[in-house]
Amino acid sequence: MNIGRSAAEELDRSDSLADVREQFDIDPAGPIYLDGHSLGRLPHRVRERLHRVIDEDWGRDLVASWDTWVDWPLTVGDRLGSALLGAAPGQVAVADSTTINLFKVASAVLARQRGPLVTNRTNFPTDRYVLEGLAQAAGVEMRLIDVDRDTGPEPDLIGRAAEGASLVCLSLVDFRSGAVAPMREINEVCARAGALVCWDVSHAVGAVPIELDSTGAELAVGCTYKYVNAGPGSPAFAYVRAELQRELRQPIWGWFGQREMFVMGPSYDPVEGIGQFVAGTPSILGLASLDAAIEVLAGAGIGELRQKGMALVGYASDLIEDRLGEFGVVLGGPRLPENRGSHVSMHHPDAYDLGAELAEHGVMGDVRPPDLLRFGLAPAYTRFVDVWDAVDKLAALLRARPSEPG
Ligand SMILES: *Cc1c(COP(=O)(O)O)cnc(C)c1O
Image (tube, rainbow, N blue to C red; front, side, top):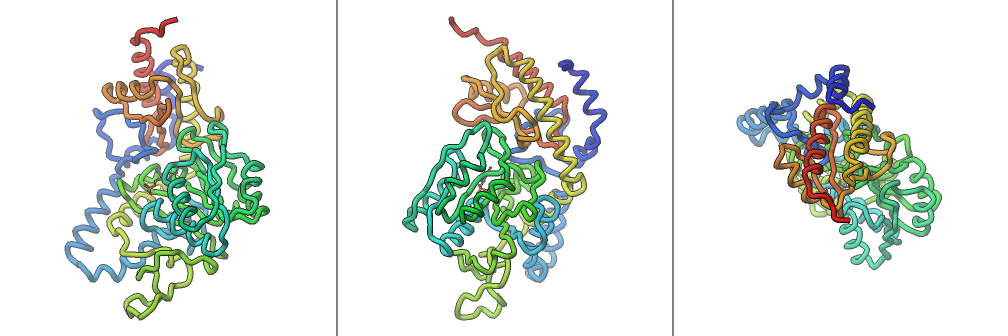
């Protein structure tokens, strides 16, 4: 490959999504931002929408705005479902955090069918904690399985672990290695084993096209502040397949899930459908922000975003191997861009120090235990020259280090 900066500049010139970057708030003199897998950048459209909702809906119309606000958890859920999740209307509720939604979904499954809960030992911490807590409270087995971090969950292994279980919970994109799980195959083996699957798509949504309906997915949860760019603490979502909604009752019996909520009746009688998964007063500013953020990605197209993301990941992988291999940096996760999400991870014994030094030199990536340095390459606004400059800075830092004895 041509490892010069000019090759990166050429890739940026022929990038069909270059104008999408202009829809984000970016200080040209600011740091190189490779942390969009943790907190996405601010779209102009989100700032404008928030100002409007604050000034007009809240500031002027006050409580009268609830006439429309009350529908937002489901209308924004439908838009998210159609633009980014491959979900037909009526199956996505936007509310609460991913943690809370996983609790609601997994509890509902347990109430329907008591049995072991399954996840992988290296899954995202909040998923493991929620499931462990539920397993303990319900007195069911918690099955923690070992999945190869670098290749991701393999259908046969998951199928065996799913035997006799009530629920299997997996991440679509591994937060460490970036490995993409084969969703369709895993849905199939788990269906055969009689277990439901809940997909945590937090590290995938907005970066990887997700096809919940057509791959036979039953349940999913995820957040919106990473690649979806809806801002810190923006609300998460729960997807429940239409056919399953009548069989599941989530454990938080809140007034926002109640039929004719303003009648304020004596006992809980939930609405039919996904609305039951909304519990209490939704974050209206968060919903406004999410709605505007979805428009930005829908305008670009998730297919185009994925193409750009894979190009960035492939380019970064080549460059890292070519320029950093000699310093002991080893690329983690699947080598082929189609098998990974939109971040690259690198193993190095000094990952933590290097992450801090990079930040001092104007490159914001992040680190994860035990020895991983991650670069998130959010396709909506990351340029090839950003990748080149970050790898170049990292090479310079590594070159300047005292060499290892022996
Ligand atoms: C970021 C992330 C979460 C976040 O959970 P919150 O409850 O929104 O804090 C959950 N799961 C995965 C896989 C994530 O990547």
